[in-house]
Image (cartoon, rainbow, N blue to C red; front, side):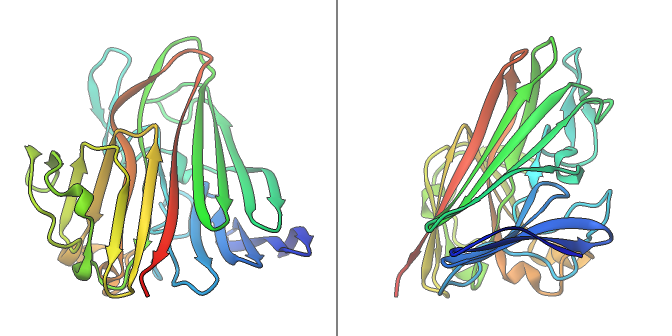
Length: 296
């Protein structure tokens, strides 16, 4: 079933069946095209005209309730990784990366102008998890124009202060991660999740894994893709860390990552991996802006 949500002289936005009863939006605009899954509130693709795709999506990704979609920009919320902080302050083991990326979001608004496509999604609920039973509302605004802008506003609807961790888990398409560098991460303190060591410093020689690091920086990052001769500039707001991930040879054990897919992307995630407070009846936000620069 296909439904046209918006159509004008600049393009159109469609609602379509993604798979297994899940729905998604896709747009065709005079400046490019892209798609967003309502399951997970997750950007799946964005490709400006004349460019290679910006976000990577696995050919063997799961598209079913209870499974995360592999690729695009998953939302890790209200916890990052596999631990959540309980009301007594203790940490408890939980499923990876929270429930937002496995929740059904609603379309709040769609706009299309000569310069941009804007899609606003919302998720309002409570008791989503016994580990995080707080009443909340998330509002995600996605703007696709010459750049990509993503903001996530988190509103605590409960009577108590709550804490969250999270990330905008972007899978960026690159020609070859082994020929990709991010010099702004050089000599920045990082925690190596694979080695279990913290406060490390080193020169990042390439982005091919296995690599899983939390860098303690909020500076602008530039992914230099030597094979495709382009740079992907990523700027975050409201985030204190960057997470760099590529599974390398470990991808062989991941059934939702197609064969040799690890040679097609690098994850650079704007993140808050340390617990952040949201006061009662208050909102906070995180965001990122992605810009392309072609070197040819």
